[in-house]
Length: 439
Image 1 (cartoon, rainbow, N blue to C red):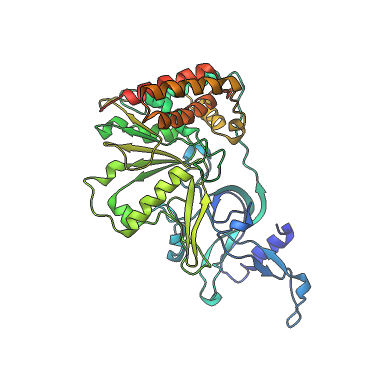
Image 2: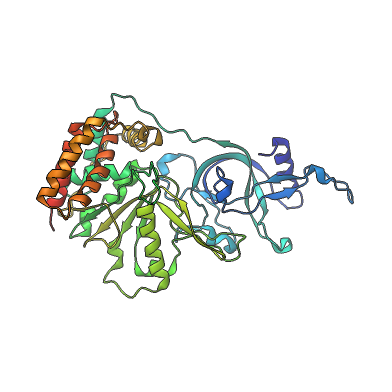
């Protein structure tokens, strides 16, 4: 981090020859293109070397050379307006050369995955380039401070908020579906807490809500966005698969073009398969995009494409929910049939603040670390598996894996975060109800 006086001097120096330019103090919560916490996996520009202060012409003291990090940042994709009451109007005049830095097809901005709050001097500066004479100006933040984003906490006696939250999430379906609401809650608090070698991460749960009529989930996106801070809708159309990259890529090793899956930690990705319509021929790019989405769901990793580097993947933490009329082609953990009729409206609570805080706490890393699985529960789960094998040996192993995923999250959906016998029994009940539903 540079000295504050140096940053202010640099910001003003870059503007002293630009008519009408100015520098302001600003706060910016952003997704950034470089993993600042781990320079070994930096995906931004190389570190810049510079000489601070004024230098006499012809006299250069190379012992004074310093480094500074340069990276891309943009308003957090999918962030809901209720997160910050301040204006979120973006720059409409960004040059086309930076449009490839924006992951979402309908937004011309850039980000990549690390959610960070910056405080600094806002000005303008030329894009880093090998041809500085033709560099375009873009908004620039000279960082003074990186602020840690603090997770919300709740009181331990907030258990009744869970019931209220499940009922509200159930209204995302028409008519309200309590079972679907509970599985939706589990998906919204899921996150990869442990990544065993050569195994799928623990703590994730992707759910496919399957219905005959898409109007049954007409309120789905609005309900989820009202309580989850970051939500991105993904209409999985043939056109989108053919036109927009899902994985970030670089053609010259010096800069990175964004991919649609570069979403900040905890983002809810609502995949709408109905947009596929009657289907169609998939070209190579579309197949690659579908593979990237499937890897994101099963591995919680996003592939980065560089000219001389194969198979580079970086960790992500994206909560994927799929809406479809038929069984999804994506690798989900739970396939739940939602029966209903269209046309019913939902009632929004007078205040959603309590539900938002409760959901934020349940989905936090601090709460996930509290998970307690007593030794005696392991024996109960083993007995349940043995019984399941007697009933159906072919599906018993898959059923156990699915139930363990659900049980972990079901325990975390309560403030105590303890997997008790009651939680395991509830898991078996939810699983039976889910597998018993047919369209």
